[in-house]
Amino acid sequence: MIRNLYDWVLRLADHPKALWFLAFIAFIESSVFPIPPDVLMIPMIIARPSRAWLIAGVALVASVLGGLLGYAIGAQAFETLGRPILAMLGKADAMAEFSTRFNDMGFWAVLGAGITPFPFKVITIMSGWTGMPLGTFVATSILARGIRFFVVAGLLWKFGAPIRDFIERRLGLVFTLCLLLLIGGFFATRYL
Image (cartoon, rainbow, N blue to C red; front, side, top):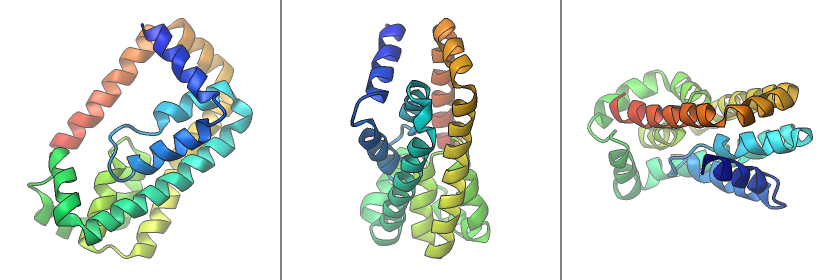
């Protein structure tokens, strides 16, 4: 089953519309969707290493644009959209306290969430809700998401074949580790 899923993702990664799929996932991940674009970006780069920089660029642009949607949700529709999204992620109770601390460290919060597996949508919505200056938010989002996506692209471009061989030989182990990271990310989101 894991092998079939892996082969399906690689076929999807090589699909003529794969960049559109990636853009869509990166866009909605930055505002409402819980699955990171890396799930599609990594196999896309493994399938076509020559397009690594284009793939990272698409993920970056779509993610920042999606972040602007998250910012708008926080700024304009927090009560109707933002609060339920944050409640679903287990972040509703700490909003008032977080708002004060968030603006004190806004640049670092956006940078940290943009680079790490911490759900970026939490930070994008909170940035709008707390009134972080839009210029700071956009610049930091570009920096953070650029680092995240281009470092991954660079590593896969440089070491793609050995990484692909490793993944294919140890598919069960890689799948288990990815699943644990995904569960760990949800756990961290809920309790941090």
